[in-house]
Image 1 (cartoon, rainbow, N blue to C red):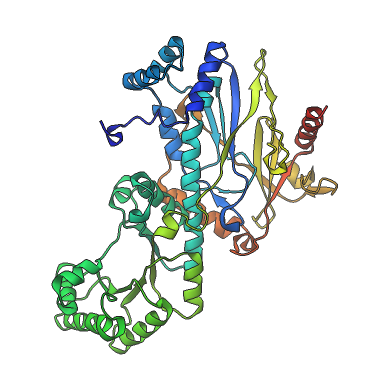
Image 2: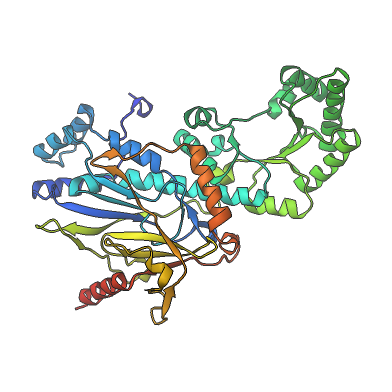
Amino acid sequence: MTIYDRSNIGMMMDLYELTMANGYFTQEQQACRVAFDVFYRRNPDGGGFAIFAGLEQILEYLEGLHFSAEDVEYLRSLNLFSADFLDYLRDFRFTGDVYAFPEGTVMYPEEPILTVVADLVQAQIIETELLAQVNHQSLVATKAQRVVRAAAGRPVSDFGARRAHNNDAAIYGARACCIGGVSGTATVSAGQAFDIPVSGTMAHSWVMYYGDELTAFRRFAEVYPDNCILLVDTYDVLRSGVPNAIKVFSEMRDAGIESKSFGIRLDSGDLAYLSREARAMLDAAGFDRAKIVVSNSLDEYTITSILDQGGRIDAFGVGERMITARSEPVFGAVYKLCAVAGPDGAFQPRIKISETVAKITNPGLKKVYRVYNADGKAVADLITGWEGIDPDAVRTGYRFVDPERPWKKREFRDCTAKELQKHVLANGRRTGPAATVRDIADYVRRQLKDEIWDEEQRFEYPHKHYIDMSPEYYAMKMRMLEESHG
C-alpha cells in the first residue's frame, strides 16, 4: 500500500503528540478538559495582516478522525504505548468543541484565530494536522492576496501546480489562492474539488512540435477558436510570435469567426517592454480586443514594477512564487495550551513564560472582538476574558488597555464591536454548513474593501493594527506573570 491509497489522515502527527497522550492516558488524565489556542506571531512579508484559511479541511479532519486496525498495529510495533491506550485509539472519535474565526477573516498576530476545547488526549493529538492546514493555506492565501492587490484589478490565475511541494500542496494551494482573490487555476483537480474556474492554453511544446510557428498557431485556432490565446515567445516575440498571431487573427476575422476570447501570452523577456510593443502591433492591426497575458516567475513586486513601467497587461498567470510563498515560505502559527478545567469544571488559565517576550502567551479562555468606527472601518481588535463585553459599551465609552503602551488612557466611543470566533464544531460535529470557496473569497474582498484601512494594505511599512485588551483581562495576565516570578 502506498501513502496515496490511504483516505485516513489520522496518523498525520508528530510522535510526541502520541507519547504525551499515552502518558496522560496511563495517569488517568485523559478526560480532563483543556483549551488550546491557535495563533501566529508575525505577518508574512512584513505585511499588515494575514488571511485565515484551511478551516474547512480542519473540520473535515476532526469529523472523520479515527485510527484503523492497521494504524493501531503499527503503533503497537513501536513498543511505546500501553495496550489500554491502543485499545482507546481503536475506538477513537473526536468529541470536542472548536471556536474559530470564519474562514477568510483578515487576522492579526497574537489573537486566537481558533480555540479547541476538548478532553486532554483528544486536544493533544490533533495539533500537527491543525497547524499544517492553517500554516499552509493561510500563508498561500495571504501571498495570493498581495499578488492580486498588485495586479490592480486585472485577473490573476494560479499557474503553480508544477512548482508546488507536492500534490496536496498544489490542490489546497490553489484553493488558498482562490480565497486570496485569484480568478482561476490551471490545476484541474482543484477546479473539480472546489468549483474554481480553470484556465489554460498551450505550452512551448505545442509550437515546437509543429516545427513552424504559424502552422502551430493555425492548428490551435482551429481547435479552440473561442479560447485562442497564443504563446508568442518560443522563437522571437516581436519578429515572429506577434506577427504570426496577427496573421491567424486576421484569417479568423476574414473567415467570419468572432472569437469570444483571443490574444497572446508572454512567458519570458522584458514583459513591460514586450507587452507595450505587442499592444501597439495588435492595435495597429485592428485587434484592440486581443488580450495580453503574461507569466514567468511573477509576484507582487515584479507585477508592480511591470505596471509602473507602463506594461500593457490584461491578465497575469502566477506560479511558483505564489503557490510556495517563495519570499517567506513559513507562516509560523502555533498551538498552545491556554486553560485547564479544575475538579469543579471551571477553567483555570495557563500561561507560557519565555525570556523572549514575543513568546509569552495570552492565558485563559478568551473572546476576540473587532471594533469599528462610525464609518465601518476596523480600528482595533479587542481581547477579553471568556465573559466578553457588552457590545453597546463601545458606543458610550469603553476603557481598554494597549498592552504595548499600558500607561496610556484609551477608550472606544461611538464604535461597534463584532465577536470574531464562532462555535463551528460542537461535540465533534459541525454547527453549520460549509462555506464555498467563492463565498470565502468574496468575504475576503468585502473586508478589504469596506473594513480594513488602505494604510494596513501597503506592501511597505503598513500601519500596525492595534490588538487591545480589556482592563480585566490585562490585569489577569499581569498577575500571572508576577506570580510566575515569585
